[in-house]
Image (tube, rainbow, N blue to C red; front, side, top):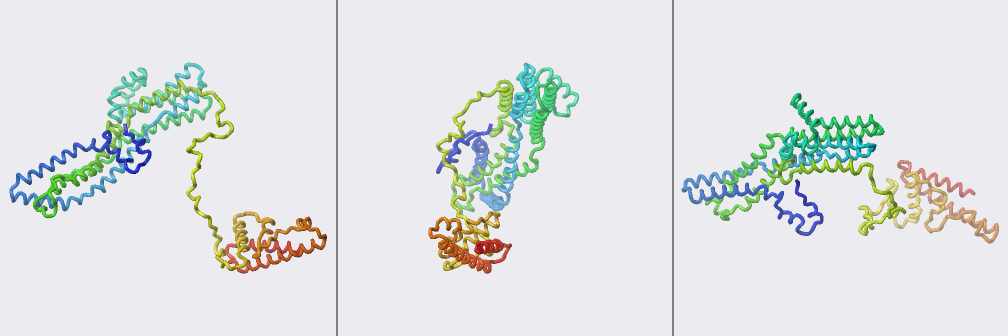
Amino acid sequence: MTVTYTSKVATTTWFDCFIKLLLRWKGSIYKLIWLDVLCFLVLYYVLNFVYRFALNREQKRIFEELAAYCNNFGNLIPVSFVLGFYVTLVANRWWSQFQAIPFPDNLALLVSASIKRQDGKSKLIMRTIVRHVCFCFAYTLTLISPRVKRHYSSLDDFVDTGLLLKEEKEILDDLSQNYPEHMQYWLSLSWAANLVTRARHEGFIQSDPVVVAILTEINNFRTKCSTLLDYDWISVPLVYTQVVTLAVYSYFLIALFGRQWTEKTAAEYTDLYFPLLTLFEFIFYMGWLKVAEVLINPFGEDDEDFDVLWMIQRHMKVCYLIVDKMHHEHPKLVETHSWDGILQYLADGNIAPVPSTAKIKSTKSFGAGDRKRSSTDGTSKVEKRVLDSWYKKAHGVTIDDSELNSVETDKDESLSLKIDDVAKSSTSGIHDFEKLKEKRKNLIMQKTKVLSEEINNADKINGLYQPLIGRNKTIQKVAAI
């Protein structure tokens, strides 16, 4: 089964988050390439000793020319380019195969919730349906996994484990003899589908949509089993695998000669007696190739392969648990501590996350008519209110009379002088009322003049001046009172 280390890297530290993973052996690169590294070093030192002690002067000269040639032209092999695409293809294929592994949990839940318990026959129907599904999964794995094939070498082994009955085995044997060219992995799913329709006719299932839902899950299960068989049938093209393998091994075969220390290069390079950097390069490239070798078939017995035997046992136990123990069972309905609608959150979850745009200040843009005015302009406050009216008009926001009256002049004198308020607050009778009314009329006329100037100066683009004209007419009507 794949080596899990996610809990070890859950929290990043300043130094040892990934470093501590280098000390593991199971599933490690050291376990895969230690023999290759040993063979490479042995061959390297054999050539080194032959050059130093077994060759004469003329033979050394030929060896030096060969080493120089290999060192100059060995890098022409695009090892990293070829390996990069190949490992990416294999890794994506590896993950897709895992996603194609079917799980019968959804089907078991549907069967358990849909078939009502009347007698022992309903239990027998549910157990038989999920047993046929689990047998389909196990039988499919025997066709693609050597490990499962050794465990279930024949149909008799399925009978011994309870996944298959003797009568069902005889049917499979008969079909295999009459139709040997077709794989019979789908036959048990056909039996399961027929049991579902039978349960509907006998009243164990109450509605046709439930039957459709169960049959859909059975078809999805068959599709995933077929996908696994397709991955086993259609492998990565052999020529691609051969090209990558030849590129890596030929590169390091050339490096055995090209990375040798010779007397000709003694003036440029120090004789270190150990090819340290060459060894690092070998570990990286050869380890890269080993990654592809491990992932290309995840149903084998490598450390990173899927534990499919455990999956077979797991599917059987979970399905029987759902249809037997959990059939129409649930805990007692009681009020919880959050019955009043208040949830008791954890202490660490009391603080809501801050939105990423929380610290960004809002700025409004109103087109070409929104021009920056001088700070000495006496109508800056009026301009702000006018621009706000444009914005609200463009977005369909209603501008009521109270907002119209609240517009301030450059002297910050309020225009919100309603006649009713004036009449109530006046203590001098009709004279004071008419005086305040005249003051209000003068202020409104002043506002009308300001708005008229704004209309003349505004850019008449996209009809943005229309709200100003409407507001000006409204003010003139009010002033006529």
